[in-house]
Structures are given as structure tokens and as C-alpha cells.
Image 1 (cartoon, each protein chain N blue to C red):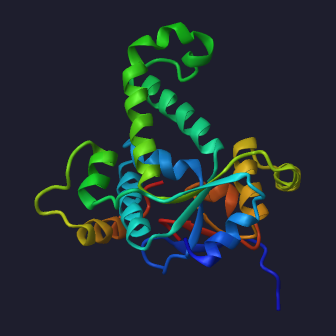
Image 2 (image 1 turned 90 degrees about the horizontal axis):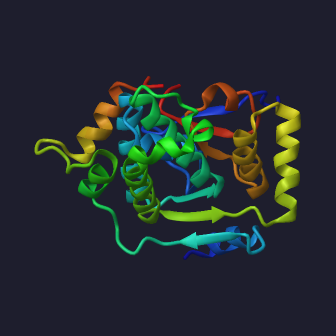
Length: 59
Length: 179
């Protein structure tokens, strides 16, 4: 935890719980959690971010 | 210098992310539910950025309550039932329990994969901030909790797709996937 994060947590006077992930989620993990399946074979995180950028008005 | 009268809009996929960002429930819900496909896709992309950049995601624990309600309403709507069945006839929710549980468990897994600071309601000063926002900006209760918590933290950056309500709030940065 960085000094700045520690300072930030102090602001909450013990009313906040900090959590650090035990493992880094992979793009496949993200896809499995969000969609129930791994990333498609030809899909990469970069392509996903790019395509999400092209169609930004999904509100 | 002229004081801003509304939120500054930031693009989650184009602008450099801050070190820490407050997340509204609708972000977490849209990561899990696919009823708005473009938003769901954007959320996946945003998640990848948050993970890669080790951004500290902080939020009020009301997120769990609001997400639970959203999951219930979603499955009821998809099943052609009244969205408020869980209030009027909770006993008829039995067939949907596993689906809601699955959605909720995925939410937990997602949150556990992020650097988070989860803010509980047990700070006496937090309610002051929430009430001020509620009264001054006429937001609904949930939004008042989110914005009140953000302002209480002294930070400005909030990730939310609730653009209509939040964009009229001055001195915050509203991160979303549209300008």
C-alpha cells in the first residue's frame, strides 16, 4: 500500500475497508466474470477497448 | 477564474485514469448484466484498464444493496414478471434464486479482483455530506449516498453512467463512456 493510499484511508476514521486482490485478474477472468466465457479466440484486450471506444453511446 | 457550474466529463477509455476513482453501483451492475450490450462491453474494457493500472476503486457499501436490487429486477423483467415482485410477492422469487446468486457471486469475484476501499456508513460526518447533497441537489437517495461519499472523501472523480443527474454537479469529474 502506498503512503498516499494510507493517508487516504485515514480520512475515513476506520469506517473503510481496504482490499488488495490476491491475484491479478486476467482478460480471460474478466470475460468469464462478465460474460460467462473466456475471451473469443481473435479477441484481445486492446481490440476490446478499441471496439468499446468506437461504439461509445450505449446508455 | 470562473467557477464551473457542472461536472467535467471524462472519457473512461480515452483519458488517463486517476489513481483513485469512486464507482457508482451502475458500473458494477453493467459489468455483470448484458441488458445494455454497448455499455456492458465498455465496462469490460474499463475493467481491464482499472486492473492494468491498479487504480484504487472506492465506493460506499450501498453498492451491494443496489446491485442486489438491480439483479432481482433484471431477472424479473427478463422473465416477463413485474419488476416489483420481490416486494409484493417475495415467495414467488424461488425459481430465480440461483440466477440472482450467480450474478451476485460474479459481482463479488469482480470486486475482489480490484484494489478497493469499501466505505461503510459508520462515520458520523458522512451522513452530513449525504444529507447536504440530497437536499441541495435534489438527487435520489442512492445517488446522494454515492455523491455524498465522494465529496466526503475530498476526491472529485466518479465513474457513473448516471450522466443526467450527476452532470449538473459542479466541481466533480464524471467518468463515463460518452462525452
